[in-house]
Length: 270
Picture 1: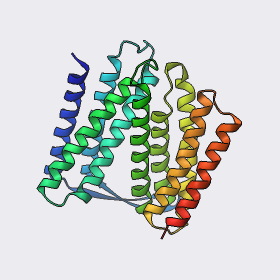
Picture 2: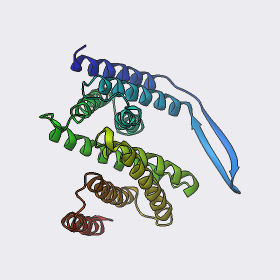
Picture 3: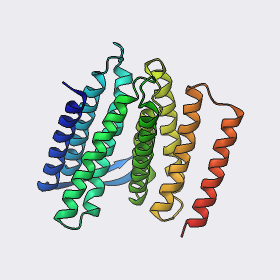
């Protein structure tokens, strides 16, 4: 089966699940519990289960497309998993955000169409980053970085604006930050171990960051930019380390970016 046909099938099935998600009304359930002496009230929506199922469908399809590449090695379980992360989180984020943006049926159809295009090009870009000799490698890598950091920003804002305790937002931030770091740090099958190692460290860093930001009452968008800057700096430095390019010049460049980012956030923050 041709590459474009495989991707189109995955996107079509995912969009079908997305449409079903918005059509079917599912009940919610409230769970009250005490964790480490802290009372918690969790609202478990069956819509979340649907979101995870649709995201899982996108993840499975992405792995299927990547596994069809002739350059994929035999021992690729940990490496192949990194191709499942970004499409899955992208779909879940779209499911969470689209209801906030949809005003009428035309906007809803446009949102579904836009989601399909975004997912289609993301899966295609992942395929073209498997082999560094691919002529579309650089463009695809740039696209994945753009989508990856965009998805990270969206989740950071959503997690922070819940205003829940660190015992909830910390694990959520660790999960999202760690998984997205693994997707963005992917550098080939031989670097799989280091990729997941740095992703795990990033998960801890982001969990600590959201724990600190929970004590700082600022607008969610401002918090999202702060968290994105932290995430960007760590992922960028880790990527340079994995590729063996972490030099003094690279450190100066990232320090300059950090300074510009700090000035921009402080200046533009309400």
